Amino acid sequence: MKKLILITSVFTIVSCNTKYKTSYSSIELARENVENYIEWINEDLFQGNITQEEYDLMKETYEETLTLLNK
Image 1 (spheres, one colour):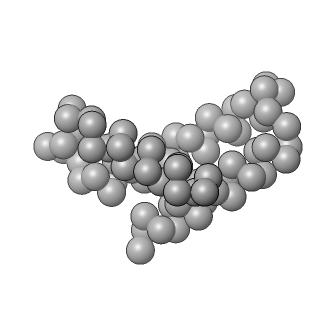
Image 2: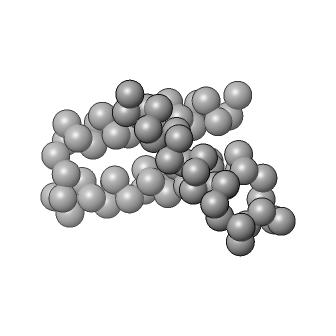
């Protein structure tokens, strides 16, 4: 369920973002967003804003999303 929500939110952000429609495809923008999310959770873990368990779960989900986007 979390994966579905994550993927849906990524595509919603992409489809609502008109700024990049001429320069990036939706898939490229979605990949970039997910990569940014991974960087942000790395920083959150470093700053102590999330636990290691939360980090592991989110990172696994984001990596699975990237795998799906790269197919």
